[in-house]
Image (cartoon, rainbow, N blue to C red; front, side, top):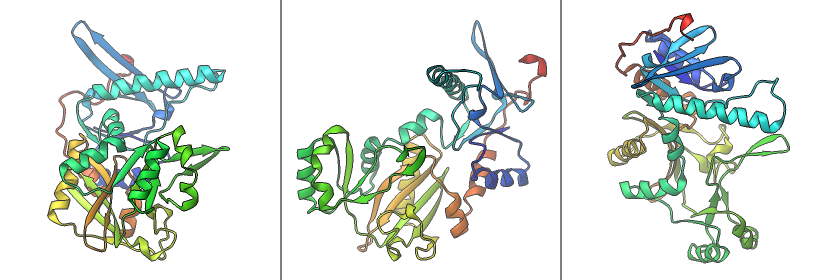
Length: 335
């Protein structure tokens, strides 16, 4: 049995479930946003430890000990029932529900794509990632993470004013009820003039790396799918391809040098993951420069534009996990 943990409206999931169905695999798609309002759990311990973990969802009782693989794609957040009044109480209940599910997931020793929640969180830490990538052998841009105004000015001078800035987290900002994504930006003189504001929060700045191409490299287990993005063909995507301009910036498969492909797999494995979306730059001089990795990165658009079989690779990896001897479904009376 395969468990898919993702938001109900995640449009990446159907491309993989179609492959799972073609392979004859059983799966359950569970959205944590339905917990605890529309789903139930039962975690029991006897004197010797954990004896059962059951999840009831949509009139089915899943014995989590029978799950052979989990695809932890893009889970929703647990949501308190509407009858619970008060903002503080609702937040508390949502947090408690999240802690409960987090403990359940950590108890499940099976194949996880991209990894258990704890490992996914660790894999998103840019401070750690850059050090790890360089240790493994990647070339990385000169980088400064600081909240020191003086340190920022010194780095600005060292790089001759050719810098970009990005966020340390996921970049999703909520403002006035709207959702915004913080992109990579070139640091202009007017930005540098406000250097004192850095004192109030850490900032990551990197030397500007000239680009021949940008690369989106998706690692699934030990399989590597590289796509080149001709981002310099459009002003919109020149500094960050996530602005998307598919009419001008073309996307095609890319053949990586064997050494770079090996490094990509080693990085994912070093992070205790089985999936990762890696962003790199190929410079005009032919150098491959590592930027970052997203353990839960989007891949649907890469597959659509390049026909790289990423969904198939994910489905095949999920199906590759060995079966467990436990029964798949618990009795209705067990909850």
